[in-house]
Image (cartoon, rainbow, N blue to C red; front, side, top):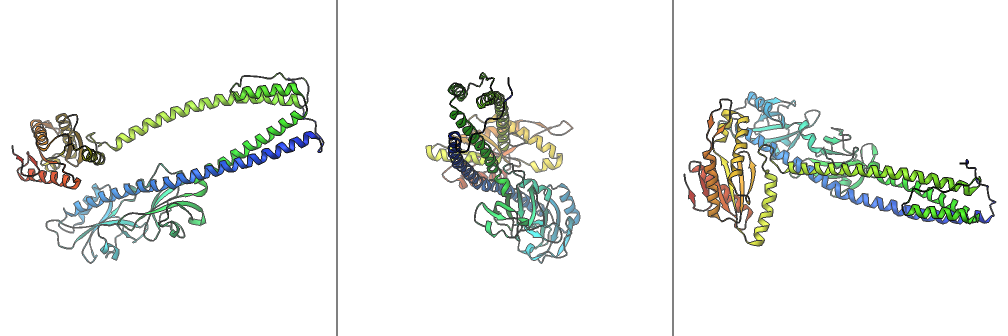
Length: 536
């Protein structure tokens, strides 16, 4: 095949030059309009996605953080209920077991510290913020970094009135709660104090202790907006206050990173437009040469390519003119298209495989999020969602719905005597017995701690009591090996039963009160709402 030579230049006033100029101008204007529409559409789409995804990411982070703080507050309250004297050893022992707190103090009502343990370096008298804390976190600026502290009154049997237990939260336990898969590598979620300083963060740059930006007033109550971040950098983000606390969540990402796909589209569109302009101009030049046969061959080849037939090759002429160059370039294009099509098909197959793997992983994650890790039953979160659906259904259909709350008798004493491993083994065994005792239409979940809950759709109160008695007898009849001595241990449960009567709150209260009466009646029995009682 002959090597191509450059085409012969045409005078500026020639017909070929005029045709090329007209084609070039019209193609350029069309390309500019199409490019603007493409870039604008991409920008608008990305902006709308950011406007919806950023608040959703921050909402999920806020829920995780609020739930974690609520659990930490409950742990602090439980610890305060066991303290009866300002003993540092008691605090140290608790901190050694806690995964949420790294330091604690006991202080009187005036804020004077009576006992301390762990980090940080607590002052002798707590600041006014600690005295005003009413179930909400307060910030301790005794040093760097700033500490997030929870407070609960001490309610031990021998404790003096007016004592408060203050616990500083572990930063390494809080930081993972701020991580999010929905942000790019350059974005971050930061936890801010009331003065807009970064307490801790997860992402590209946490900058703990520094101001999040010169001013965050532009973000307050305005959704997702652009603002000037640290160092005057152009950022986009949103701000959200944690309910009932001085803490705030800031989601931010550099503007150029958030809209990076737009810049990529601009580059691709420019290259494509340039290729289109050059191709049309070259085609116009060939048309003016009035060489019909080669042009027809090229047109036929272009038509076949548009129909997906890339396996063709034009006969190249021996001449070194423009037609020969175009024919050679056309053949090279078809070869590259064949190669590109093979690459695209391979990439599509790989993408399909990755999508399948991601779908399977998402299904596994979804199942894990609604399953209790110990007993493999549905967890408290999924139970609440399922109960909501059931209440809507029975409210619409008028069917009956009952609830059984089962509590293992003397579980804490057994757990303290044999250890947490034995307690976990017992919970697994009880879950297995409950699952074997209920019907296929019933719903079983671990409600929390040593409590299990059963929903019985289509069952009246008497039928639910019968089922509860069956469950109680099954548990009482079983024996469990819980320690290395291989001795059999007998366990009983108390069960409260209630029937839904139009109020979700009353539904829970009735079942809980029935369980309380079962405990008060000597345990190992079933109690229902109202006056119905089934003793052993």
